Length: 194
Image (tube, rainbow, N blue to C red; front, side, top):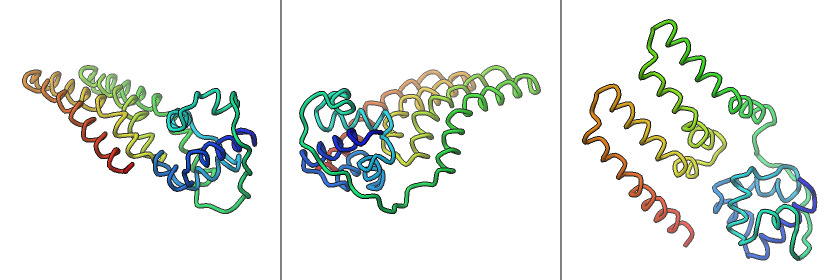
């Protein structure tokens, strides 16, 4: 990330009256992560960039390239923080990249060795569950993980029950949990903002 983008993030945060802690809480990340962005030591991931743009009411172009006027702000001096080490970050990236290959290997081994092709193909549902739920949990974003993965999780459970036990009805009622979950989740996140 460039110094200009880091300065823009500082200016937007101050313009909206947020402390680093408040912003971190709104994004579901650590204060140290916000501090690193504002010192240009690291950059927000795509999910956080989108959340920042929505929170500040600007486009991603404005956030990243500075289309529009923002007050100038100083970049914070470097300090120590308790962020994860580079080796842990490399391990996380490797796991993110290798997970689909691992699932495919498990499926092929199960199919060839145990002749269990159906309904074991459902194991491929683990890939979107990983990227929407497990991956964000590993990266420290629990609430985002639950909100992003709940419909996929319900669909996977429904398909498993349907294919393995033939119980399509009344288990389709599980899908009614999705809007209930989002209503509760929005209520909880709305309560935290106040």
